[in-house]
Length: 115
Ligand code: 5GP
Image (cartoon, rainbow, N blue to C red; front, side, top):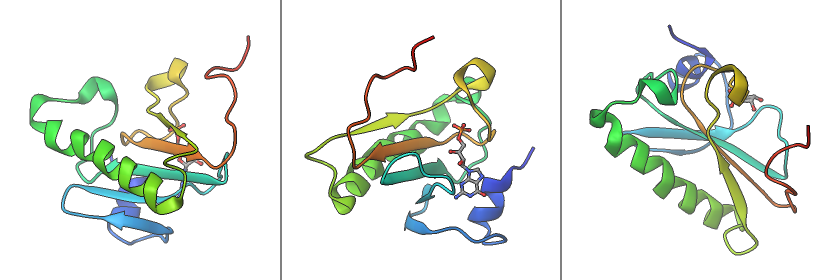
């Protein structure tokens, strides 16, 4: 099932794209939760972490190398940042095209909201 992120890859809807290569695309989140909030996605449609296969390791490794580059480009590498990948309902996943959030530019606080 394609999602809105496939439309961003295909340039069918606009996005503020900050990086692209053969395997991944990165763009600013439409509803940023921190001064820097970028999403990095594999170009291949992978719904969730549960759907990853060994063949995807190159693209998934690329998510991390690109995250580090974007953190540097955005000036948050030294101050710090958080990488998040949500999976399914309890993880809070809303878009079922696997993506990594990069959040930074302010003190992010505890990793999880208190119950
Ligand atoms: P999730 O909860 O699935 O981990 O995160 C999905 C993220 O995608 C949310 O932070 C949401 O704001 C972002 N998002 C949803 N639709 C769009 C869109 O059309 N464009 C952009 N740039 N971000 C989106």
